[in-house]
Amino acid sequence: MDRNKSITYMFLAVFAACAASTGALAQPGGGKEAAAMGAQAGQGRHGMGRGGKHRYGAYWKSTLTDEQRAEVAKLRAAHKKRKMPLKARARALKVELAVLATTDDPDSGAIDKKIDEVLRLKREMMREKARHIAAVRKVLTDEQRAYFDVRVLKKATHGKRMRHGGGHHGGHGH
Image (cartoon, rainbow, N blue to C red; front, side, top):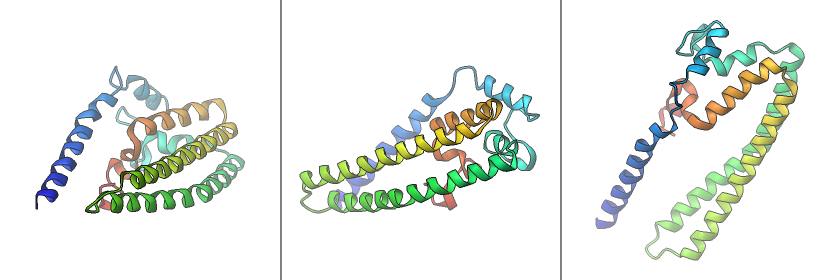
């Protein structure tokens, strides 16, 4: 029972630290520049456009020509093809890591090796994502690229919270 309590307390401490640090990501000036860009696109200060879609998620896509749309779709499909196996393997490694860490006599050497494997895959996924972003940017006009870049930068600071209405994936809290 003591082990379960310590795991619970550790989880709560990490959760509290994460929750407390989210304010550090806020932009100085309250995001006035982003609001101004949204206003130029005919959208209100809070970033909602037609159909309630976030301005940076949909706006740059809505300006694509048919040729650009086809090229971006092709790039996205190729990116997903390369990303999916990496992501699946990373998930499996995280489970293996959790199993190693929760044994009665954890092997720190094996845990360290597993962590190195996870980080190697994360590095590979980040490189793949950077290559994809660069490829998409080459297809866009200067104006489209400006909106796309804002979206990329916003996702970098807000992560998964921007997707699916700013909440959790499928209600699972990921």
